[in-house]
Length: 481
Image (cartoon, rainbow, N blue to C red; front, top):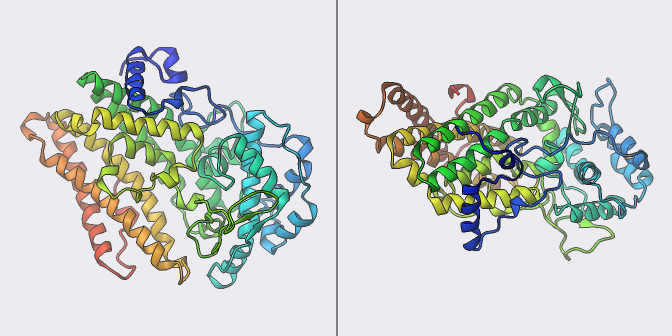
């Protein structure tokens, strides 16, 4: 793949791609992703990771907040239990957390660290009763309805300043701004990362956070490849298009390799999943959340949580490869309700990719050529592997749903199942339209291997969709990715 000029890595700009951006703009689509970013932007160097490593410790002004966060986890990591274990967290918040003034803070790193920490406090406070109830009786009960002013007011101010939602979010809160390097000069590898904040403190939670951060190291290459895919399709540069697809597939394969190693053990997932819940369409939040000391709706505010969203990698693949057209509007993990949670620059970038992909018709361009079709299949093969892992995690959550929530959860689960099946069927249709005689032997073998895995997934998911009982799940070990 050709080397891009230095400006490309900073602001995604080459002369040719500026023309594409201008064309998209002339159609009324914003290219706001080219603006100077806050901590979360999207570049071919950092991908979806922040521009700088997260601040691991707050300034001394927030000493009491730092102290409470340190005492918060169920297991503190030093052999002792924290406030969430005994149900004393809420009491500490109500009696000891000061009402911090954050109006004077404009530094992007401090704002991002405070957003991470206040959203952790908010979820821990609101969902502490649900976690206790789940440990006692394997149901969630009801969450706290009112977020006290000493969390709500600063959180609303900080969230407004960085244009975020005042609730725990996947990238800005739980994963991509929640790591520190053990060796500050070392790379972002699984062995050199540890979480800054945790809810349960268990090894599974550490692996979840560390795995997603390490995997996100590959997203810079994915971002670069996605832009080159769009540029080369628009300029009818077939060779560059195929090379860019290979680059994207290679990066996705590395992402899947990292996650397959770090997310193998899900035995303790339930110990922290409660705190990843949103306050929208959840039975523990029948009337949303009231933010004390700030304006809100009369019925409380509602936000999706980490458990209801997904890594932006899923959204990028869906938008780039035009997979949203396979399913009804609003039913995908990257539907508007979820994308609205993401950092501002993520939203702008993903919107741009979606618009540009539709304008250039990436899927049709790929399927117009046999070699490109195989590379498109290879990319979808990795997307399926990624989606399937998310789906398996969702499947494992079915048994812990409450009676009132289980029907809605099952419906959501079935929507996700159908989408993955539809992607598998797209792989099969792509293979069926390729003239095998035009392929070199290696590509012919590769295509057959990919379509075999897709068929295995399609048949298994069809069985699950046809089975009203929650049985016959496909073991993740069956898929040889």
